[in-house]
Image (cartoon, rainbow, N blue to C red; front, side, top):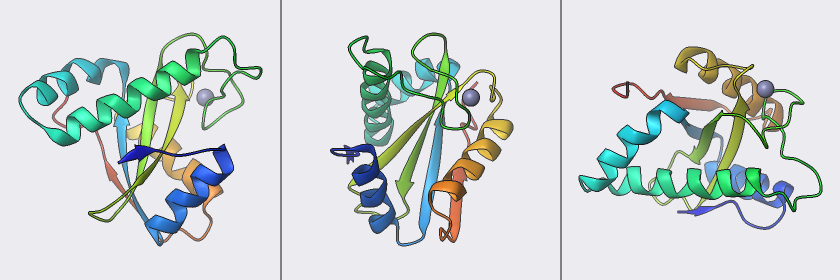
Length: 142
Ligand SMILES: [Zn+2]
């Protein structure tokens, strides 16, 4: 599993092609990171992958050299500063190669249910023909 490649549009297209109409969404809030780390340390390959993807995304979002600040996936606010949650859109198939990551600002949501609803709306805008968005809320994570 690798982060979406090249340009934003290419990355979105790659995820969309792989998803064939179905994606699963993982939400990682700032408060979920410790639990994810514990899962990864206990041997969860999936948790380790999600942590790595989240870390890459945060690196990119915070990079001061980016000419344009990265924006929230749900509104036009910058996510360069301040806490934000990350939504990973993963093609719903076992051999998923590409993942799309969205940053969601605190103003757009902090609780799993509202974040999931926002992400669902955002993904429906990117992919109007997406037929199934399975969500995996950070349930079990405090
Ligand atoms: Zn926002």
